Image (cartoon, rainbow, N blue to C red):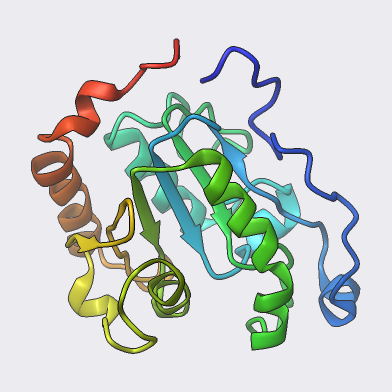
Length: 211
């Protein structure tokens, strides 16, 4: 972690009381901005906060979906805390969402995704990751449109799960939704990073900023 980073939670001090989407503001428990190492080479992005994150305010915590991802991060050496931690101790990875608020009865609308887009774009620009992990089809479509030559629907997340897709200046490693992800799919994702990504330069640059 960069020496000047004071907190893993919302390290870029983004608006913690955003009220740009009235329907989401009325339904959310809390607003969930990004969390993690601002010098991280890996960025994990899902469509919206899961139910646990809506309660804790920390991405991918507080429920079964969060525990699955935190377990993956532990296996990859990105987390130094147990999978059920509400404030994970992370290194070399940043966690965030397309949208920062959760509606308990529906996913975000296209307009809500567009409204939140500047938050995600700013995080990507400031972190400048080597690898982005889009979680779920909606996230893959959004990132593929903005950061690759693919159009929405060109890449199926189930088929691309645990593979590498070339982007502009970085690579995407798609992941199927955590809520429906099988143990076999989790193992395949971990194996792909360990055997095909970490075997390249990314492992050598881990810790390069005094983490």
